[in-house]
Image (tube, rainbow, N blue to C red; front, side, top):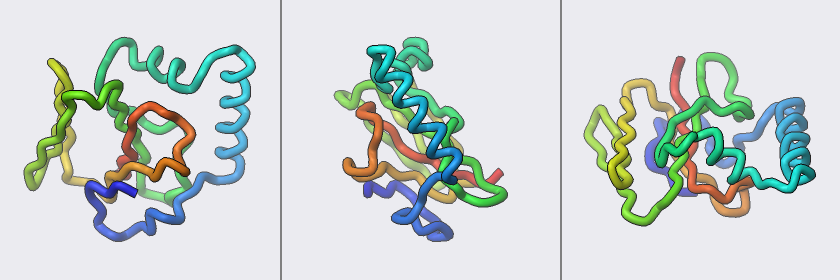
Length: 129
């Protein structure tokens, strides 16, 4: 696991979705596959040409009350880099910059390859509501 930040309130190695959310997610993956597409193609279409994006996770981990689960998508890692200050985290790719306030962060991490169901580069961002 590539951990960029954690305040250690969550055990990041045991995160999982509620069973009903996981079932919905797996069902969507089957629909995408049966349509002859891939999750990566669907996500790139949703990003509408953006190279960097922070979006609320449609299939979040079961985090309990008071937390929100976002995904940070990066369409190309070549030439992409992050910049951090005590209060901000920026990701720059070509002419796009994604700036995120670190004020309410609980965790910012990338799953290990065996836990990824989507091949497109992405990070999980857990924040307090």
